[in-house]
Image 1 (cartoon, each protein chain N blue to C red):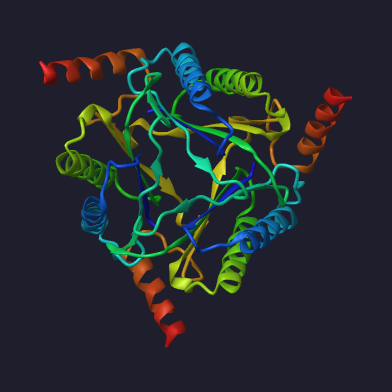
Image 2: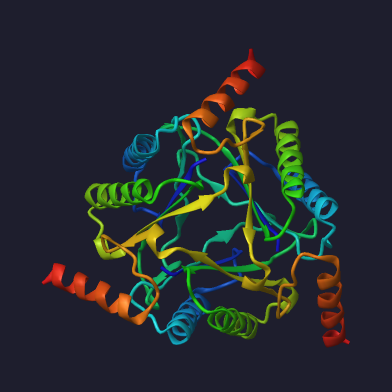
Length: 138
Length: 138
Length: 138
């Protein structure tokens, strides 16, 4: 966690744009939350043409949805949403009307990585979690 | 928002059926919630054959999941779910045992469209939001 | 419900591994929750190579996300997460650092299967729900 999904129509994002988005999403998430980058996942599922509709008509919406650990301050969430929205619009030139960014909560206790239930999103809990992971790998 | 995902196996829905579903989902959502159609997204991800299982056996389930703004009355949610279920079964002839419809909540404050954090799902908040959008585009 | 999604990169899971995962996920879910297997869905969406990033670099993460009915005990959720994590790592040989398992809640009242809003996840409610379904099909 987090997992950010950028859902577009095939042909929207080439490898260079995907790479730029992955770098920026990772940067924004770590800067705004203070959490490490190690487990920031960014995935780019694509739909074939003719498989997306807006207001009942065929369209090419850009749907960015992040699942982050619950407990972030509203200001953190808003900063993530705003920065991702603006970066995506700038990078792709997509109409701002066609972009959706949402950042959803998953309780830390509901997820496991590296074999351990996730820590709460605080500096102390994360430090303890990584220390435990390091010790197990030593 | 909302985003409705209709997840099926390749070959289940042709362009005509996708179009009919997108139209109906948009109609049902706007009728039941009173919200405008402008931002209703309907997407049709597909799985290759052999990539879905029900009860441990290969199957072709039909999984319709909507993400809507939190705060809708239970009666609104139930009406959406029931109408989408019945329409899908009728349109496709799929077994009712193989259809799942779920409608999930996303707090309005957790999402952005057109560059603005979403309004709460009330008439007054939505009117103010669209007025702000119109003013910005004027 | 539940719906378990196993998101990987194309080429990660062959038909045999998908089948083994579907069987095990179904087994774990029914054993830990006591609910019947009839509506356990397991789907395997895949991303093309170059469509996944971890920590900003191209990667091949393994992302397993379940949507289950809300109301399960934390111990049930933890048992599901731990068993799925360990089974997946063992079956695929994937690095434990690259695996994420999350189990998310959906209120029963927010979903419909077989034409009926789902029962709460208790033995009594489920028995009544299936009895109603049987009567309707008789």
